[in-house]
Image (cartoon, rainbow, N blue to C red; front, top):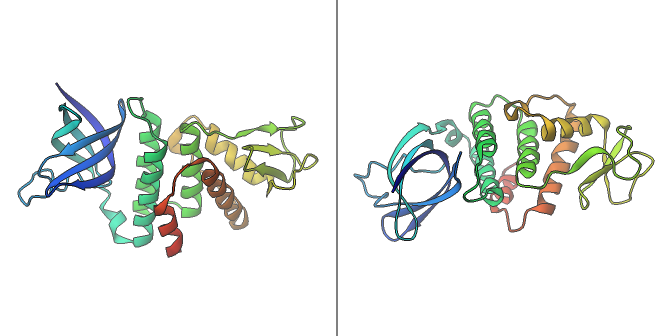
Length: 245
């Protein structure tokens, strides 16, 4: 049985001498693992169209144990990512995080739109990385089932104070009167940005906010720490990226 899907290759592995096992993030099927037979041979038509970061249309058929890609037509290859080592490293981190938080056989329309938009912004350099990275992390965590409680102070219900405090461990916020010693200070502007990232319905707009440089640094720190507290396993790509900057 053959099926056609649109998806982004977020992981690739060599198997045997010439085959490739890729993981696709697809709209309707979520994460799909599929083999590309003889992908590494010189004459393979699927050599470049089944590489990391390729978004395309893939014809799959269900083999005995797994899907096999019968044909691949690239729609976007994000070539510009490969021109800058920091962009490339951050993009690799984004897709590794997507792999950890994605699900098989679950519609992933929002997740696919998010990663495609983030890769586009990275490749074209249209947004500050200090905006793209935390926005991507927090919204991806929300899609993966780890949305923090940002509605109001967890203790008293106060909607806003300046500052507020973000509790990494509990995934909630406190007002200035309910401060806990282990919570991170978050100016009201940072809390407003976090709410915007997590609650905005149009996922393509989550990168459209502005903060001072100081508050961007705070947002950057909070989002990464919160992510590391929720994602199991080693994020080697994040470690590599942080070693470059």
